Image 1 (tube, rainbow, N blue to C red):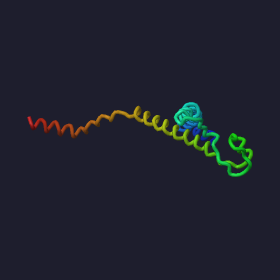
Image 2: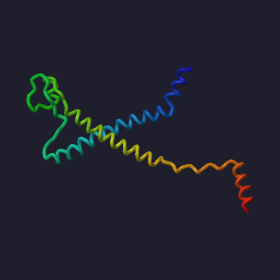
Image 3: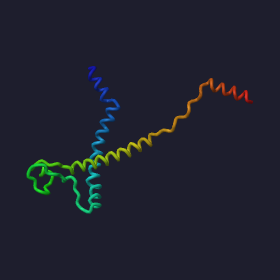
Image 4: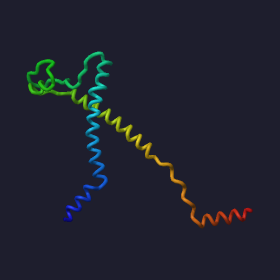
Length: 138
């Protein structure tokens, strides 16, 4: 029973629960960022570039008989390919995600900033000495 009790205490600690919530929220947030890149940013990049830029199907054929312009999935079945477009897409996702998380943490730190604590009251002997000093001045 001791091990089960210890495991329960471990699993129900605040840090473990916070981590679990963070992982779940992070997974959902990753999907949002993927959609942001795929559905918002890449169309803007395509518009600015004046053409159809689709990084997800960009690759170099390393070996095998791959038809020119074949989709990435077919090219991977037909031979060995270096899928650099997928990496570019993931790198863009990472940069956006890191930027958003940076701003979230910065905002949370600004919200959590507390007013500096009031100075502690001086010890009683200091207060008495000040009263004596003030009395002598009068």
